[in-house]
Every structure is written in C-alpha cells, then in structure tokens.
Length: 246
Image 1 (tube, rainbow, N blue to C red):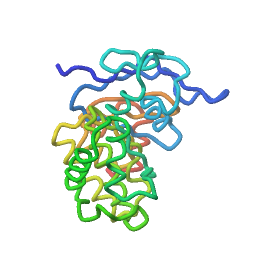
Image 2: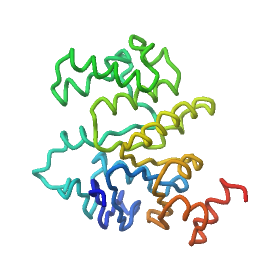
Image 3: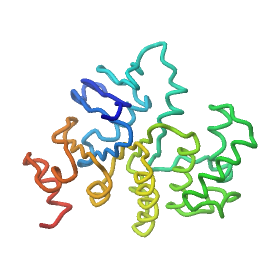
C-alpha cells in the first residue's frame, strides 16, 4: 500500500452563509492521479484552494504526511514548495521571461543559486517542449504554451504533488491537446496529481481515481471503470450523460 500523502477529513468551507464544501473526506497516495469532476459551482476549485491554503477551511482537517497543515507551527511556505499548483489562468509574471518565470520559485523559496535554478528550469522547460521560448515574455506565446510554462514552473520545484485547477478551461480547443499530453506523460512517470477537470476522456483514461462532486459534497468516487462504466448515483449518471453519448 502506498503511503497517504494528503488526507482530507470532514472539510467544511463557508463564505458567509453559503456552505461551499460540506464534510469532504478523501485521501491521496503516492503516484495517484485523482480527477475531480462535476458541474461548475460544485466546489471543486474551492477544494483545491483549501488543500493549497489559498482558502482557509472553516473546519475539518487536512494532513500532509500525517501533519496537520492548519496547525500554527506548520510551515505553509515549505508545504507549498512540496504541493505545486497549476491555475487555469496560468498566473505567469508578465514582466519576466519564460526562463525567469520558472527560476523565481527556486531562487526565492528553495534558495537555490541562479546557476542551479537556470539549469533546472531549462531541463523542465525542455520536458514540456518549451525550451525554444526561454527568452520570450508570456505576451509573446499562446495560451497552451503559457500553461506548459506554468507546468514546468511547478515541476521545477520538484514537488511531491501537483494540483491542477481546470488547466485547460482557458484554452482554445486546439491547444487543449498539447497541455493534456504533458499531463499524460507526467502521470506515466508517476507524478502524484489532483486534477479538477472538465476533460472527461482525460479523467477516464489517465486517472486511477475519479471523484464526482455536486453541491459541495462528494457524491460518488471510485475507479474510472466504476464511475464512467457503472455509476451508482442518479446524479452521476445525469452529469455524465451530458458528456458521454451512450
């Protein structure tokens, strides 16, 4: 049995009187590719933002290797270095080159020398097919290329887990494939990933676990074969029927 890296226990998140996450429980083990699917507004992105502490949970517990990340003595900075995040809107620094975007986390957070950071950044940019664009600014490259740079930036920190928040939703259809291909390759290499996505074929073919969320709860979870091939809940069947023609 692989060690559990992240455990989410009884997680609740409210914004004012609006309860966005209601008693969420799940765990992620090493090399898991967990895809979280569901309609817009079901709480998927809020869940990821709680796991990365971009939102503070209202109650419940998130453990990283058994340690409570909400504890006062827990180091959020070192945690974020180990749990990378790729956003749907890329979040690149517009005033920096592709290379510098990939180096900054290593030099500022990991305190790696410029020479070492540059070497690692070039390695990971090459891995996602972006080495020819080292000196380009984000404004000079396509959306798909920006997202590949964002993935390289996350990889350069050499994290244990990468969270992907709808990484293809801001892209033109022809650019979606190039980003999903990078993610497929990462999954093959054993990268632990939690992916919020509307790409049902990716969830079905690449993940080893699928979580279907609706109205702030985990409605159903299981292997891709179970969720796509034999869903148990009517809500899951209704949701999937919109994406998959029988």
